[in-house]
Image 1 (cartoon, rainbow, N blue to C red):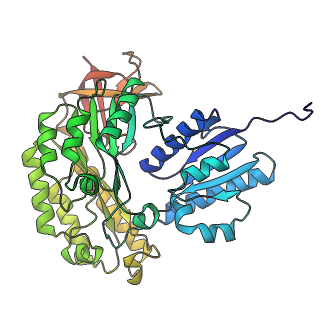
Image 2: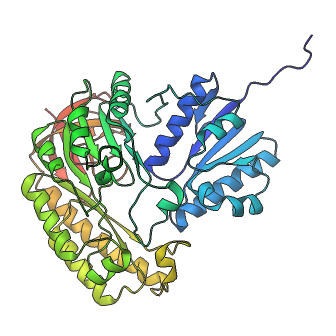
Length: 433
């Protein structure tokens, strides 16, 4: 006869970093649920799994601080076990084991079966596309490939995620159908490099064919492309974007810099001339396309002249969406051999100058949207406003449309037809018609 009551574990999954990590956490949670485990995302649980980011200094710092916070909770008896997974753990496992030894166990990015085993669960191979989504119900990230084969000098992702591996089209379609059945209307396709999709499986760049298959999924209304690479971009994707209303006229393509000597040192495999030509091809093929890019300032050897060239180029290109990062000197990357010679305050000042300029460009482009009628998806309610997005905007990083909630009732997750009546640098205000 049992005298001891068995306490049922509740597993709390905490996600740090990018959308790829969000996706991985959702897959982990789907597996745990299929094993009959009680699981929450960033809630209360006596067993904690921290999915870490190890990309740049700030992200690493946040990951380490989160681990230390939970270790204090463990010492105080508020949680029983803490497991660490993800990119930081993949990259620095020996260091972490030495520095924070009281974590129960560390796992890398490819060790999901082992992590599940430690949590008392089995890895179920048959669970294609079964995951617990943590995003608002109307959109979900859909990872189409893992890893990266690009040799960019500043980037540690290949160290943490390995070589590029595409997921077969039929598996991605099954996953999309399952998401659509749950009410997901927008699929945000993610990978370290979308443009490489299919080279390993089909011996050709196959993103266009994947899009052709995904637009046939009932219930999906928007398909958005994140993280393309400028070298070897498959231009047939633009034909699909133009032809298929479900494929958003939107592309996230991090360009990083424009000075030829910096691009060469970054090992980007392109030049200013080629990059500028490519952006021209995008805009010619899809005239009302929104291009989001990200830039790095303060890379080793970046002179004031290089920076002014970048600034002028941003002014000339007038990107609809743009983010700017300061260079982070990452060990075991190719650029780590270079001297990190741009002072931190110069890096920050350069990033601020770019973002100030972009704010003005964004304001000017937004003024042109006044009186336009746009399709808007409602993501949430915030104070007296319903907050939504157009097809030209990604969640969390781009512009939003605010609609007065005291005048109109809208359902989150639904689409509305909205006339823009006012515009700021990063926000639009509209009324439903």
